[in-house]
Length: 455
Image 1 (cartoon, helix red, strand yellow):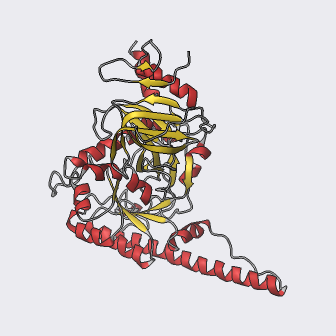
Image 2: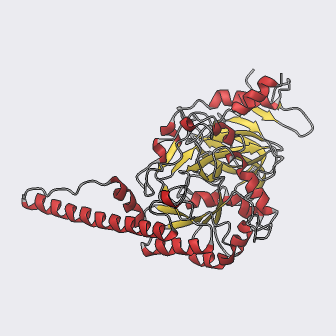
Image 3: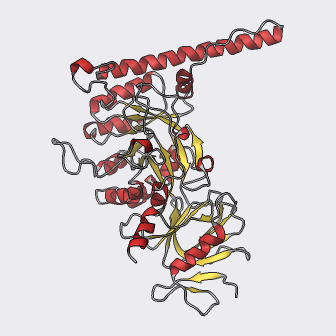
């Protein structure tokens, strides 16, 4: 007998619609996964989630709603009474469930590390030089990381992969999707942004005075960064001049001019000098923040702010910059001279000043805690809707993918999460994650070990 839907009532066991035998929800989801989630293949049959509460992000919550996914896209969203479900669709009764867009972590090291204590598994940062913009996280990303399924289990479907701090310009980020047959499928945007770290930790002053090397001071950091961008401007000018002479030579049948020697380091900085890509500017203290922002403005860089948890005295200045801010991890301890809630209340303080915020885990091992961070911020004054946007639509807008991700809207990628409660409540269990309309296995190395040793 063909089963066409799942019916779930709070007071009853899930049953197949039109079938008399009850089935546990876990078996239902296994069936859905085995039918629709083969990586490397486009979703070829519509899936409709019916009867759940839809948190659309862009147009409010819809009680008793329907969302239809087909061909990896969202094709319909609305009240159950107004959406026509394709006759070929696999209908899942999501009564009692909450359905929301896949969550986006705005800075992680997913795929760059596996076991922190084992150097062979770490490709976090190249410390041989402080200025390394030509490094690419995409070239070290390990798609088979066991940490990725752990993150997916709590509804995270996309993330920015960034190098670890330690260099002022440590390399370029990548924007990934947490499912795919290989790194090529998972890397949605290569080199989508670049960190510029100015926290003071980048100074080469460890191990005593006799072991210091340039730059060992904040003055040195600023000078080195300025010289790097000046050199990149000069390199760009030479390339432009070469292209002009080359075109003139072709038009007038002259010998082609000699091309400038290629410099990958300077070449990598050009899109940022042109404002085509985003700098992620990290500074913790007020003085570092103002110095770094001044440097960014000097070269007309497009930037977002990062790691400003301890810049409370200059939040009005931050707001005046009119740029987004990445916050987190919200569990960071305050400094000795700060209030106990300095870090916890930062998201609310920024929001009250009109600053667009997004959340980040800054981790590979704790990405799963991303929605809990947003929920925690609510307890310290951040409005609920803004907390949810900070890990969905706001993040999609900051990283230039709002036309594809961040909300439940027709035409967007079908990255959808179905859970038994509010996404920002730590008691909520995610029951199924769909990425590009394909049901993802709700297992990880951790769940496998749990099941093995709880027999």
